Image (spheres, rainbow, N blue to C red):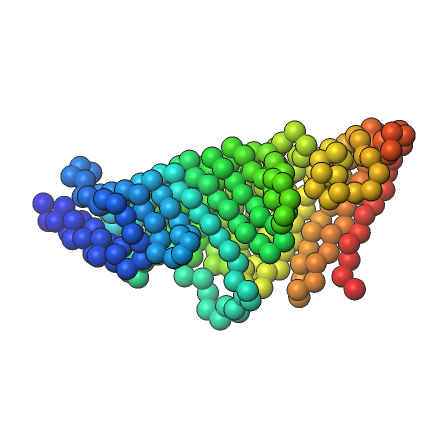
Length: 275
């Protein structure tokens, strides 16, 4: 009984903090298992950075017996909109474990079901739909397993360009993120990649990638001169160090045709290097 009372007390503290950051239509305390259920949640930012059909917050019983309190969160049908700041402030402290509001708890396990994610950068927007993700963490160590039914790239002032389904496997500690798998699988584009990102505020990036792309898809995005047909594949490496970006890749094709003229068997190399 004492454990249940303690659990309900912690959930009531969470409820008090929610009012400071979110609006919602309904909030209730489920009896068994004890959990806080919030309907139609919206962040108080304008426009809302987060909307969700339902959020369920549980305090595992074992958490009540430990000094470090943790929560389990399930988010149903969230819509997440991210806009990067005009200038990234340098990070002087290690990344703290993901917490809930200003409470002394961390999210030990988070599940996203049927979500959507939109990242609006200056020149383009990236979006993913049908997202299902599991986030776990233990102190500074974390892992992310996510899939998306579809993704798209939208250049500013132009039409949406579908990419394909996404699979993402990440792990890390603090600001050091290992990309164990990044895969895009669509009719016009197939990509597989792995690598590492360090210091998220001013990132150092090392990614090895393999790709196979329909040049007609590239033409629709880049509006290249002439008429392109066929597919091009290659293996390359993307790096960002000291604010300077480089990309080096092999290129090959057996089916490329330019302005209706078959190019035969092609092999080459592309380099984008900082000055």
